[in-house]
Image (tube, rainbow, N blue to C red; front, side, top):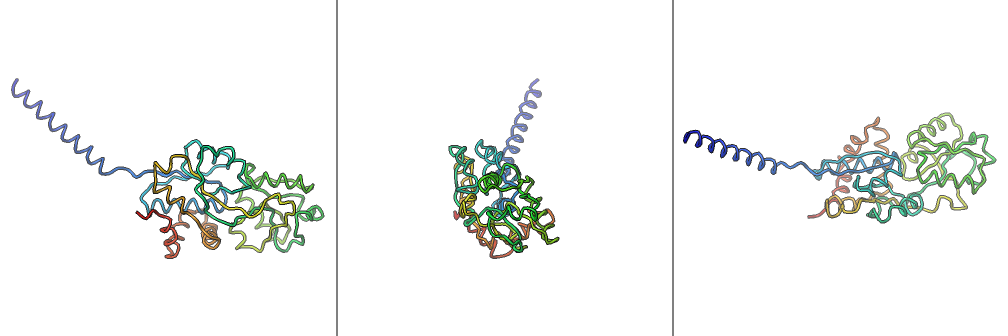
Length: 292
């Protein structure tokens, strides 16, 4: 019996020691925290979000999940704390309704891009310059404005433009990629087409385009793109918060990134990683990171 008791205690001690070593090893190999970003399927949002993902994973040691959604669910997910941040909030006009609705549940971290613009865009060869001239050219445009996803702020503004300018046009909902594909086909065939457009966007580097003048200011003046985050992010992940707060690109920087992604055959993360290989681009991204 005494031998059995000694053996029992020996087994117990060994078991506790092994368990302790396993726990210790686990503490030394903690999984990196995960950053959850959300974006809308717009060219600049795809570009900025994938760049942030690459920076978090390759330069800062985080895991980063990104998810695409329509603009309404995007704001809802950040406000409810299901997602950490959204880098493509257009203010003060385009996303004004969402910001007003969720202002108590999200944090505005400031600019990611300054000098943005929305409006109706046509090929430069289209022989009109103002929205007020659209009705006289409706046959050439097939009485259609090619839009993006139905919930987007620019679509709401376009519905208002149709009403305010008394346009005999139908607003066709699609998506950002579908809109640019339609525009590309029209330009290839030298046809007229009017689309809901915004800048920054790679299409302005690829084709000769112009915004139609908007005398009634339905689409507002020049806007800025902001990053909005969930409440509590600064306390939970201060380095992520600092990075997102410092994140800002100019027209040339964002345009080159968007162009590289547009030519990437559907591999935006790989394109963002390739963009980051250039020393000047890596220096820019590293300037957003916490100094301590």
